[in-house]
Image 1: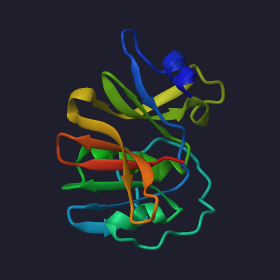
Image 2: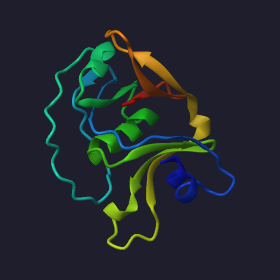
Image 3: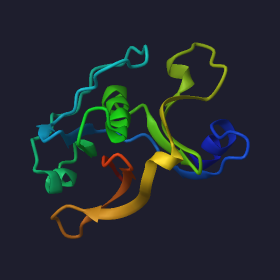
Length: 169
């Protein structure tokens, strides 16, 4: 994963900070005070024909307990639907486990394999929802949930007050 992103995604002068494999799971979250499980992508999404998920639907959890539901791969919390974390969450909800998170010292983005868009791809990855690194307040690994031991997630916190958690295996 790291080798592929370093070779095919990074721009000249960038350094890879984090590259996650695709995460199979629904997105859940609380945006503007409203709980949505599973999350439904809205807005312009890539032109892809994806199969319907064959996963069971998640049960609506309370926010600290989302990690205990194995069908949820992501959790978003944001004040508004225009927040940075929500932009990323839309793609993870839409992609059904085909997209991944990539972060460099200059940007954070959702990255899809280009072969999903082109029969003879001219590149390995196609980038969406690119956010400048200056809009990211922190990128860290934290433990969440009420189960013991608590589970690790990658947490992106943005300057606009939004947050996206991504399950780690």
